[in-house]
Amino acid sequence: MKFETKLLHGGISEDAGTGATSIPIYMASTFHQQKIGENKYEYSRTGNPTRDAVEALIADLEGGTAGFAFASGSAAIDTVFSMFSAGDHFIVGNDVYGGTFRLIDSVLKRFGMTFTVVDTRDLNAVEAAITPATKAIYLETPTNPLLKVTDIAAVAKIAKNHNLLSIIDNTFSSPYVQRPLELGVDIVLHSASKYLGGHSDVIAGVVVVRDSKLAERIGYLQNAIGGILAPQESWLLQRGMKTLAIRMQAHLANAKKVFDYLSDQPSVAKIYYPGDPNNPDYEVAKKQMHGFGAMISFELQPGLDPKKFVENLKVITLAESLGALESLIEIPALMTHGAIPREIRLKNGIKDELIRLSVGIEDSNDLLADLDRGFTSVQQGKDHVTDSTRHS
Ligand SMILES: *Cc1c(COP(=O)(O)O)cnc(C)c1O
Image (cartoon, rainbow, N blue to C red):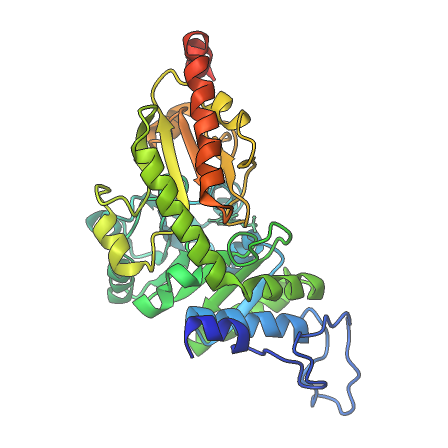
């Protein structure tokens, strides 16, 4: 089955008991056991038919054998790290989601895990960071907010050669754009709150694996820790996922148009988009992604006020998060990455003037007209905003 067909007919696409073409929301905490030990379901933390359906679907879409749904992307990430123990060492990408960095830095480190942060695009640096205690390489590609692209197959190979697990957070691409398991990665996870759910109405996370031992381990921890996705949310997630392909096609087409428009803007100092032929990561992106995603970050010329830009938009929503139907825009320095000390942020290349845009599926002309509105507003206010921008 092709991807578009799998979205509708993959996984468990209808209710076994009734033939209902929409999986029912099984609001049950426990299940009547006719004979002890012979039931498919016993207790809804351990297994629930609605959750099973969305788990089977994501496993199919990512090309895995088992999927697991969690109450959030963060719960999914925490459960994956719970496979490991005190003393274990990890190599982590240097531009990972802020919440992942927080989990590592303020939670997992307290449990005796150690981490080396590297730019995973640099394969020599990845290899050099491996120690006898290293257990896994954890990365995102493209990254947030600078959209850096790592060669997934190459990192997976390094991991295999050294007997390490490779783990990828695939949130920014969705399985429509990129399927890391097919490139040799061991564990793929998502914040399903973004493209998978797609409608800004559900917080969820998923993990997918191919190997049966890993599946058993993750399943055990999902039940033991209990950060499961509830039946109602499971239903909402699979409902959102059915349209992933047509949504992504619209996202990708609009992103290309926004990129072309931004490329001609004198007020834009720099654009970060894997589909930019001048981007140093372009060839790797082309090789492993189907389309280039729909996230674009850009810097205004120094002295232009990014706050004024985003606050003057009328169509594009000023909000955190991404991967929604509606376009979302934000200033990493003031919002998603505001907790990172300014010096570290600047060292990581996240300037005050940087704006991150999750391109939605509105009519592209309305999006470009809205961006025009933003550029006009910063040009008008040019003279007296220079200083406040510097010190924000
Ligand atoms: C949002 C996000 C997360 C965290 O997911 P939640 O569902 O918000 O817990 C993890 N990774 C990436 C890349 C994200 O964008």
